[in-house]
Length: 145
Image (cartoon, rainbow, N blue to C red):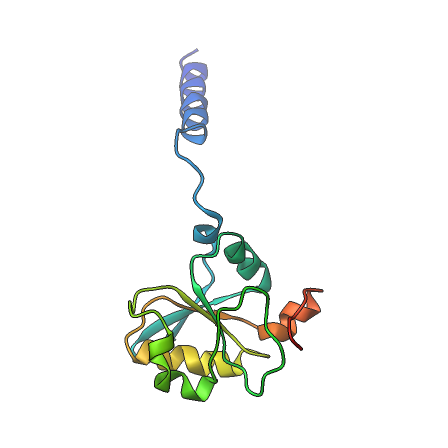
């Protein structure tokens, strides 16, 4: 009898915890990505699916760093060549903690740009892993090709 009481008590506690009054976080905060350590800190790689989730409640500056221009993912804010990112900081948010998401065709150029920004003290840099190659492979459109 005591065992049944304990099991019932534990199950009740689990149910109460699962039904707690907390609200679900915003979709973009659900994205965790993969942390990439670089000199000066880290940036976060995200998949196409994670980027789609982030774009649902866009709260970041979205930057295409690919050269030459081959198209934009919808909702792109800026195009800055990856090798000139440090010369165009005036186009980026002044707050170095602001979320910035970078992409290019394959993620090589955007990885370089992400590393540059981290070295310059930016703390909330995200990168589309696989770039717009993976975006298109998922059947998603580019604009201005």
